Image (tube, rainbow, N blue to C red; front, top):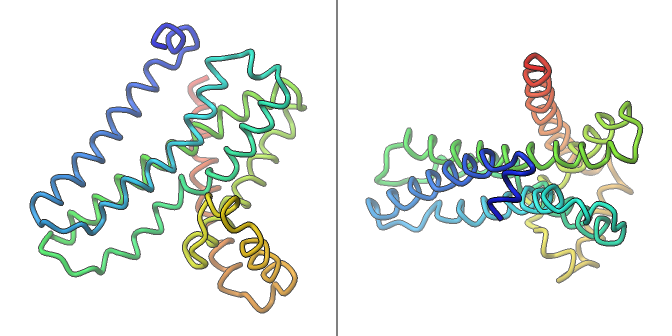
Length: 221
């Protein structure tokens, strides 16, 4: 595994993501041991869900043969899409910052933002991996357009998760209920201002992050 990661120039990235993920876990465990409060331990599960898209694209990146198998690649991309909204979703956990706790407010704020930032990195890194994969079969001019479209769908997915309380597993567990709720929003968009307000706001935020990093990356090329 280490040899494959090194061959495909992913070893440093993997080590870095592992270290900052452990920092997140360490913060949450310190909070739990200090307060004996389970509150915010769920951030670890949310971060695991955010990790899945990056794990999938990393697997494809270090095993190029998977990219030539259209059936496997399509399946991986579908699973990637289902879990991608979990990456930026952690930012919405800031709604819990009003929770009364013996822990200082500033610590809880830093804790959530740390998890949210790492989750966002998992999402962005996996999206860039996906762009590199798609460049092999799609005109480069369309790559950013596709990414922006995925960010919009991901923003909508965040609303579905935060407000409607659906999660990625429900595509299998309760597909008809999920389709019913999404269909209602799409068929009667003006009856759901909160859905579109949250979706568009998160879409703008994610684009600000995406294009900021894109400009920074191009500057170093």
